[in-house]
Image 1 (tube, rainbow over the protein chains, first blue to last red):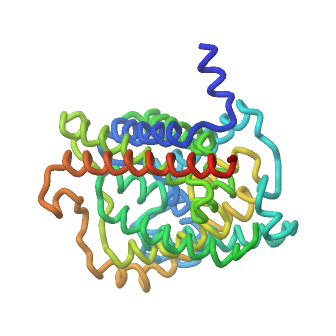
Image 2: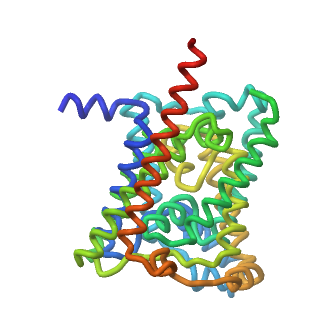
Image 3: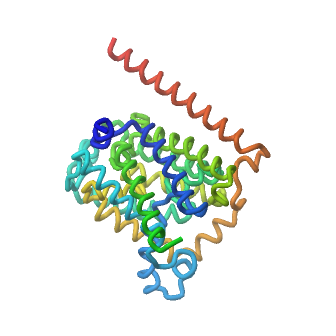
Length: 176
Length: 188
């Protein structure tokens, strides 16, 4: 029991252990959804923004038929993700309101909050749009597709790592 | 399924998912970006461990008949690849990802809660509004539908899972060894 409490209070686990845990979560998701879904992140944002999309374009195909408005399974799951992050942070004492990453960012890109927030915003737009084109994000496609042995997952991951490596190289050059 | 289960089940799954994202370090900028710089491979270790454990469990449940089927994400080579290429740029530039934005928001990160979440909404909106112009054309090219690797190479799925598991274990064993040796050398 004490051991368990110690583990839950740790700010960080071995990525192997946390990752294996996520593998069990995909199994649990398959069980609880009776074989209909695994895990995902990007879909929930689409359901949530659908009312805005329909207000702008009432006949829109995507928000009428593919990702209609609603508090869907994906939305509840994303709410759970938020809560899980919150509880883990509270237990480990790392919860803190902060505007900037804890380390590394400032030594490379400077102290400007506006710059950080603009890059996060632009990247988030790109990520979510990309997830739409690819058919999912790191969780909904790379993990969920991968555990199901879908080639889509491995093609996506190859693209993601290739462009990520190039982007990091361009942004960092010889810094840090 | 009862209405309550329709809420409790996904919240529970999401809760564990978010908890593990935080414990795995996936809500931190430097952890995400450093996998692309080969200075910290936590993201890769996290993902590969999840894949190995998940694929064994999922196919076990299906083979035992506990679940009626496995959801297969469709393969359409060009779309999966272009999406992945765009995704990697955003992931490396900001060190964020769709689900970690939510988990990191729970940790009090205002850069995730404000520009992160609103950026996700803006991206989702943009995708939905341009869907007809973009998606059908891209997803039509090299579309194989919901196929899986074992079908493609006409092999038993346990062969593929076994191979994937062995390759992953060997890869990480070699990686950890190389990292330890490099650390020893710098110490000496």
